[in-house]
Amino acid sequence: RQGTVVITGASSGLGLATAKALAETGKWHVIMACRDFLKTERAAKSVGMAKEDYSIMHLDLASLDSVRQFVDNFQRSGRPLDVLVCNAAVYFPTAKEPTYTADGFELSVGTNHLGHFLLSRLLLVDLNKSDYPSKRLVIVGSITGNTNTLAGNVPPKANLGDMRGLAAGLNGLNTSSMIDGGEFDGAKAYKDSKVCNMLTMQEFHRRYHEDTGITFTSLYPGCIATTGLFREHISLFRTLFPPFQKYITKGYVSEEEAGKRLAQVVSDPSLTKSGVYWSWNKNSASFENQLSEEASDPEKARKVWELSEKLVGLA
Ligand code: NDP
Image (cartoon, rainbow, N blue to C red; front, side):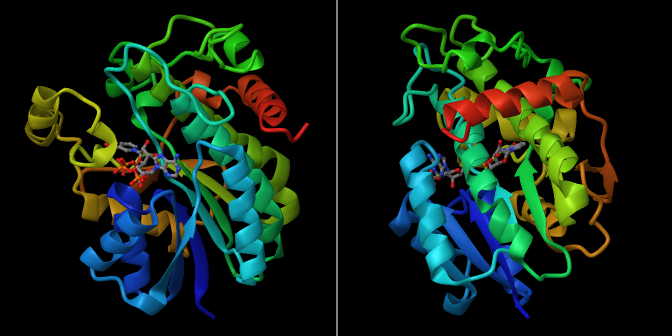
């Protein structure tokens, strides 16, 4: 049978390119889980996705109510869940002040990590029920959370510290809006959120892989310097970043190519290994990459998991 894949943030960039790549094979029905219905409909049309290959369901990751509503709607739809891709993200590199989700969490960690954490925890039961030959949960990571790489060492570096800010709710009222309890820094908040994404994937693997057979993975798709992720950046940066990545770091990858990479992690029969962080070399062959010390620390993973459970109302 056709597989069903849910992709968050499929209205642009990597998510859209992946949706297109999977829909094109005819083997997948793509559920585009997005906050803006019209934008998503236009995006799907603009890349030529056929009507029968996708559905759009509303999801705003910056609201826990919306996440729960999405799960409810999905479960009522009667579709199986074979693969879930947590892809959506926001990035505020130039913000001077933090902004917050509906539940009062700093917006980048709230959206990129906490919204996805609740979503994937609630949908685990559906993944588990699927009779698809290879069911998977993919959480998109980033090199920026890897302090063992050159790009991961560009300041400000990711660092979760003792997670006092996360423990206190990241709400900027009686606590800091940053996980480590420090001063707000939008670029760092994004990197921290990506470390949480990669730690969450590994904790899922440790807790659930053996019993469920679900493959839990993360990936760094390459530097897709042209996506909307950089929309909040100053215009000079937006002009110079793509050529810089193309010609200097050579880490540049087109949206189309990155979409094919993520589509591989979703569906390639040879990529069933769980607990892995995939990357690609210059010839676009996938390999199992090393994570930084912090992004692979099992103690931190457990702590992120437990604190996040409390914040999203699961504990
Ligand atoms: P885009 O900005 O193009 O896409 C981000 C997507 O997330 C959009 O569809 C956006 O929706 C959605 N989104 C944002 N906030 C919410 C929300 N509250 N609820 C639901 N959806 C939301 O960026 P990319 O395609 O570049 O990013 C995709 C993933 O790739 C991210 O996880 C990012 O960290 C990762 N990544 C990107 C790299 C790059 O170089 N670009 C490198 C490494 C990793 P909307 O259209 O409504 O704004």
